[in-house]
Length: 434
Image (cartoon, rainbow, N blue to C red; front, side, top):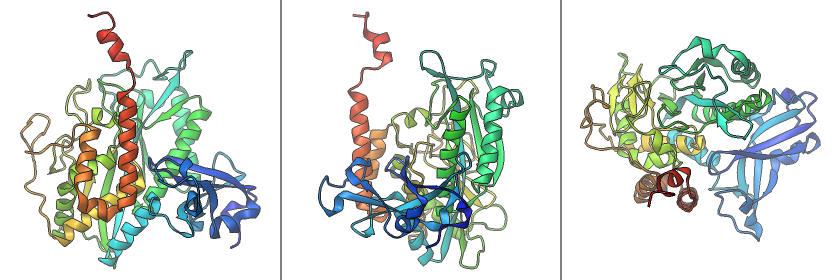
């Protein structure tokens, strides 16, 4: 296969995949070996990649990232390098521990029902700076409003503005159609929206976005952070999914023509809510994630994060917000593996549509002010969410037993590491108290 024209005179190939956490991994390969990267794949030691579950010896110890050639793009900040997204293969076969392959299987299953899922992803993030002691904090001391949403002064000030401006330019060069950039509801917090696409293309675009944001932030002496909840008294960062289906003719299958949901959309929503507790483990996969999923304690007056399981019409206090003939799913945060997360959503949709699940009555009141708005709550800890996922054998089987097993094991290990660590709070609370 000839080297892509978009690569021009690029000398290197960045063959990139994501691990179980959705974190970009890869290696640089000289362009002379393009054919090998496409046909065989770039080779990696399987057990060195978190969450593969591969052995340290034998034929299945090697992981190959095989380039999906149409995803090739020149890196905007490293012009001599062609970036390409890879699928995981082991022993010459599709690897069931690869989250991108997991999403491709899910989209194929949905296509067999006659549907394509389109996704608009809204990444919220922080831009931090390190002080002389290496600690992260806000780079702009004047960015301290109690309600900083849409603050233009902070948005357009100093190196943050220069970083965001260069980020938009780089994303455009990378093939993303940026729609808007705004200051969010916490100091140093921003959101970049880019145009929706089908599930796989949207997942690839988010991967490109994160690679770019990390690189451009570093160039400006800043640190891009997708941490869900950096400040206890401020809103955290979400990664909202705007979800819809189209049929084989490209006609919107969710929209009832009046801004609400068709019967297909209602049943898909029913599936999403039926599996909400288990989905939370995948969509909010860190210990810190559950400090975001709370209704109170924000200086701005709201956390913008869901707590109950339910839905409402244009209701931002619920996990599922129905608007403009689509579903906004507000549970995910930026620490999720986007490929695994969208695969899980698709399987929840399929279950809801095929079993005609009902989402129940809409919650048309403020769920923060009315704690009893829904009889069920989202899991309050990562451990509880993992329990819900483990107990949902149907969803685990649909997504893929191997990858779910590895995901759960990885996250259980993360909890054990956290529990074994002595934290600053413990020193303050106990050191001289007794």
